[in-house]
Image: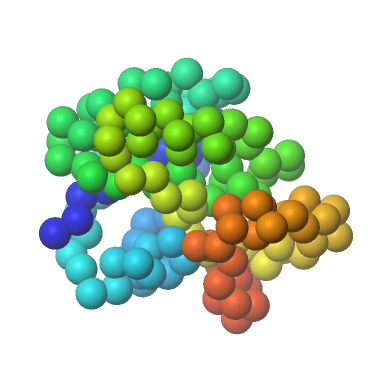
Length: 145
Ligand code: SF4
């Protein structure tokens, strides 16, 4: 059993989590890593707005509830512009709480993929690595449009 928490970009603070929860159920996108594992979602919150002050505290509550992994939701990479603090969040959560951090939840929707490709947002090798868990393939991306 793997227990996880999800932190979403505050731009989507009213999001009901539909794509993330569907992807968790379907083990799609960044959740494909749990293909052969039971998963329990034990925390879900937003970063509380730039520069993400809630990231300092929310993982502690998730950890107390059994979370071993924190997922930074796909919204952090697909927003316009993407969150500029992703690397800071990954490093901070790992160092402060000793938790694994995964960038991404549901597959990148195709519409966002096309726009970011046109903008060359993710052209660098670093970005390609960052979106690696959620890039998936066109059929899957279209299913999450
Ligand atoms: S861009 Fe980053 S810091 Fe700003 S609201 Fe979104 S996740 Fe939070």
